[in-house]
Length: 291
Image 1 (cartoon, one colour):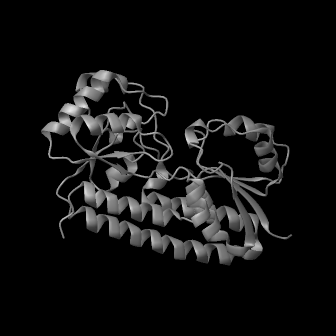
Image 2 (cartoon, rainbow, N blue to C red):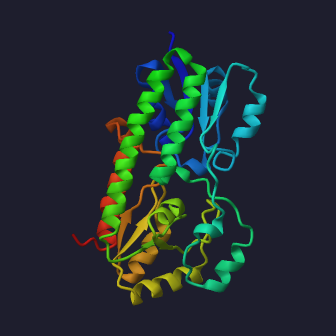
């Protein structure tokens, strides 16, 4: 009683919200543990949860396309909706485009020029998300405004430290290309830290599927390059990444996009910061960190 009831969509928003709200709110994650975010479709019970909440936080209409129809049907006029991508200029796909095994095919498939919604993987953009959530909490619960804003300031300092940690480590890596066997969600991250990436997938659409030719070309590319590792995405069977790894004699490493977490991770109380620090350790291994 008396606490804000907050419903969030993706794990980063859930973690940021609970860091800011402390004991002033009950924060819940709409995505069930282990469910891949792009395939999620809300059930009637989820819609009821949103309609009964005080605050609903989502990444934006590109990441959660189902959200717009649901929000139009919500009759709770007191519901505060926080769009976490507000005040962030979303990059077009070609703005942080990846290297392709076959350049001609790749360019043709990028004529659509969609925008990338995976803003949270960049710690600097994550700071903006945190500030947006804090402002929303402060407007909804002005009595605790100073509490939310102070927590946001403290957490954004942790994100700034993470940014410095990542930047310092990656500058000492001999390789600058992330070889990725999944749908690449790290465009903002790569752009922030001056990295390239190579993937058999055209763009970051969750519905994209690589052609056998692109998989073969990527295997050939890895064999020619001095690369012993290929990264895969969380919560999905790394079928394509495994085929490429086996064909090229490479090893698999997780690059966790933090869209959602497993039941085991949830039980352990894993945080966004821990996920990103784990990613950095695996990037140091795969990119040839030299201290």
